[in-house]
Amino acid sequence: MTGREKALVSKLEKEYSLSEAEYAELITGRDGETASRLADLAAAKRKAVFGNAVYTRGLIEISSICKNNCLYCGIRRDNAEAERYRLTEEEILSCAAEGHTLGFRTFVLQGGEDPYYTDEVLCGIVRKLKKQHPDCAVTLSMGERSPESYRALYEAGADRYLLRHETADAGHYAKLHPKEMSFDNRMRCLRDLRETGYQVGCGFMVGSPFQTPETLAKDLKFIETFRPEMCGIGPFIPHRNTPFRDEPAGTLELTLFLLSVIRLILPEVLLPATTALGTIHPLGREMGIRAGANVVMPNLSPVGVRKKYELYDNKICTGEESAQCRGCLEARMTSIGCHLAVDRGDAPGWKIN
Ligand code: 5AD
Ligand code: FES
Image (cartoon, rainbow, N blue to C red; front, side):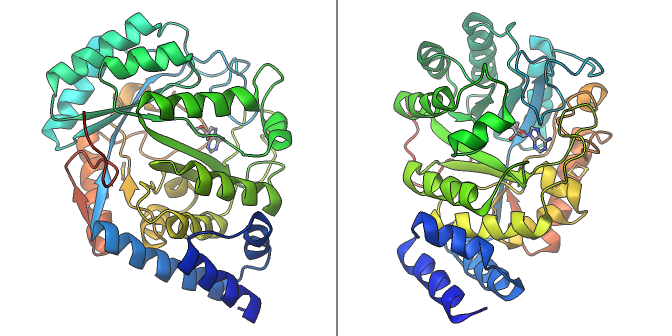
């Protein structure tokens, strides 16, 4: 760690901010010592805000049908090999009921951009879920929709929305997505979600093709200025049936480094140690928490469909029952001196309507 890196780390620690050029410099010049210093500072911040509690969210993957064709994603439209499924309303409600018994108080409904989910259909599911479990938060992760749609879903009872921005650099965005998708619309969606009243999550893949320290610096500046309540980052992992099949995966080291930086920028952000991180290393999620993350998202999808929701190769937790995933994560968190928090785990200071 050179004097320059020390200066950048202490500026970040004190000011919760660096210039875009400084973020890029910190990423380019990073070494093991810088990473471990940042991880210590980030873990201390996490502890100051959340103690040893790690929030848990039950993930229900409701549909692998997607009209989009993102170049990195295993459920992209052009992947003719992908096995497509859509859960019925009854199946979704029964996954949630099982999750509720296991102690979960936040359910994340995630799926491809499946045209079946009109506002009417999705609002109906959200309403029933909230009626069945009034003590739970509902998070949606269903992609780009219109402002009216976001509003209708919010009024139906959805509390939070995850929409990774994927990259804050428009040129980079165009290299990861087909022409029909637009960076401006992605950003428009994030602003609409915020204005509607959701707790909003953005995020990106670490090590996606064409990513550079400069594009990452833009991601960090975007996170700093947008101030999301949640931020999902995990390594890019190639999927065999996508145009990026031969691209290298993102690294554990850079993912942990960025988790620490994000925790220092936004001490209160809800920051998951993702399944992708657990996929590239058997102890990835534990290391993620130690580097500053504070959320884990075990899978509550029916075991029969889990392998079909395959965004990337070798995804973990596809054979385990929900109860096993919960038990597994509890043990993993205990092993690093943390415990699973079972309340809704809203963003600190958030007022629930
Ligand atoms: N590797 C890692 N993450 C991926 N995602 C999609 N495809 C991949 C992949 N190959 C992420 C995207 C998306 C989220 C649901 O999953 O960032 O927003
Ligand atoms: Fe699913 Fe460990 S979290 S098996």
